[in-house]
Length: 167
Image (cartoon, rainbow, N blue to C red; front, side, top):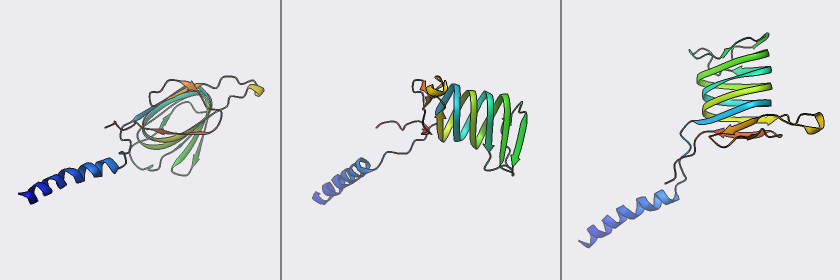
């Protein structure tokens, strides 16, 4: 009987101790990114959906798997440059764009950037606010449902995902 009690307590204590020392699980849900009136550079490496437009500038889209059925959609570019099978650069004014359903690497450089992204991935953002050059407003951004704030004036890395639920 004593051996059975010891075995029972061991089976209860060992899993509890293991779960207390284990690191939290990685983020699993989709995150969100929103940019309003952005001026600067945005780089997104995201599996999910990105939609937006910009008033003036260029967008570089790299599709790591160009032979699948998922395509980026870009309208109204005055200049399109193909860099191999995977990368395309679109330049011009008032350009709407969309990437849906797969992993795309998207770099936007320009003014008047409006963007919404939902998915998982990472990216970089760099606003071009410079009061000495007369640029006082470089837009706002919201990451993973946080309040909007000004675009950073230095290159800033971010992760697009939800935080895991606390236990």
